[in-house]
Image (cartoon, rainbow, N blue to C red; front, side):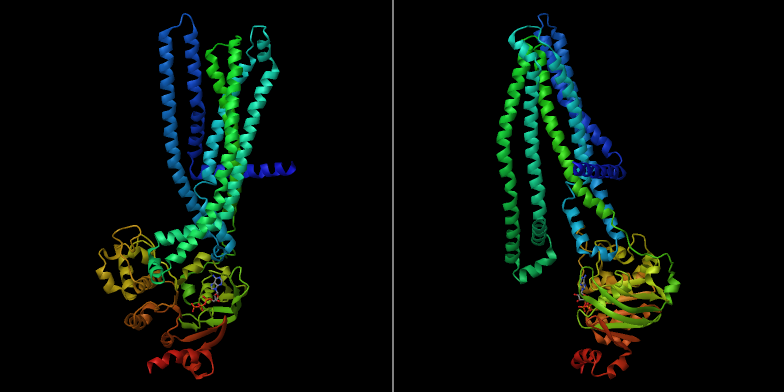
Length: 618
Ligand SMILES: Nc1ncnc2c1ncn2[C@@H]1O[C@H](COP(=O)(O)OP(=O)(O)OP(=O)(O)O)[C@@H](O)[C@H]1O
């Protein structure tokens, strides 16, 4: 019992927070939802009430036809108006729900950006986000809006029905026959209430069992839904994957995987209709029994003179409404309680601590430009990994230097850059900028000091200019200059709308598709446009043809000017442009020095890497 109260209190708090969130995201939504609930509850009573008046009038010996006609017209008009308002409110709810869903998703995305990058990489947080994504349309605050509407409508209907049923039970038969005594007795009323209560309990219990099973199944099926969604998407819309699917004949493998997950989903989900069928037969029989008994009871009361025949419609309708609305109320209350589980994940995600340890120290571009960076005994493990990707790295580089980072695949080069850019914090050791731990600087100021082109850079379906400037208002001259510097001048001349040409055709038929090398040049132009004191290029020329690569190298000094530049490259010829070369091996910095000096050490890795490529040029 204590646990139940604690649970109810917790759920109540979550629901209240959900209500406040709905109100802050979409202020009129709750008002519309309440209003829809009110009109939905009134609607059936209009017909019941006026029908009883009409029948009562019809039963009178001196019936007034005009009055009957007036009542009939009033019934039609009021029902029509109520339905009209209800439809209008439902349509409004649909639109508002769409906007609410959109704002909620925006909130979640914004939260994602406020988190540490390392947190977003955390498997647990990713699973949390996937869970929220999967149920985004029919759980959480979206479901709460509908539950509020149904609960409002059921509570009001219950109040109306209880008032009518109480009036019916209170009405006494004046006759003194055995039948009159029976229908007047509390026993008859209690028996009727027990029958109705039992039926409600039975159907609510069944709905709750089915619902619980549904959530259990949905949770168990979560990985299968994800995989099914992924593979269907791959076959249906991922046109980029089309070439691999064709060339490696992967369709059969994908279809087999898809079939496996669909079978799992089908086999588990079929339990639900089986359960539903099992319960609904008994439920239907019980409901027919309740209707028959109600008609009998109300009919007998009317027959023995407790009230007029016209009230039979009103009172039987009230009993039916009471039963139905009590079931609905209990059902939606259970739904609301269950939905609070989803609200827990939702708020847990929103309550995740934001970016940690962001210092207050401002970092002006001017300072960053002349900064000395030092890694002091830095080691790093990715979140959830047992394995060190970087081990005890100590390195220092001065302002305006050109540093090449080389090493075999998986040796830790990109990880080193990610730590430098504060996408992750070191597991051990520290990184200093001008002798101050980089965590002490304002996060935004620190990030503003870096222009990075990662290997897996991303361009978006915006225009060329917007992709470079990452803004819709930009200096066209400066964007064009960066594009020219990145070697895209001739290609841009062919773009139909110059800087305003839409990239990719995901959202626009006029969008143009670009090659991998062209995309890389745009990413370089974007880094140049940012004009940060540090420029970091991870495999900057991997997708470029030899002429474009030579062209970029020839203009590299012009492009970089007095910035500090770090290159990761497997093309060791780029090392000749650099003052310093850092050689990584299995997460360790094993050599650091000038190209000429490193080459002298013929037993070490740099010599081996250099010669592995150089032999093909001699
Ligand atoms: N997000 C991640 N989670 C866990 N481990 C990772 C993650 N990213 C990289 N690693 C591991 O860290 C190690 C270093 O990877 P990193 O990408 O830094 O290598 P790299 O030298 O840049 O390789 P390449 O030359 O192939 O680009 C590898 O063993 C890799 O498997």
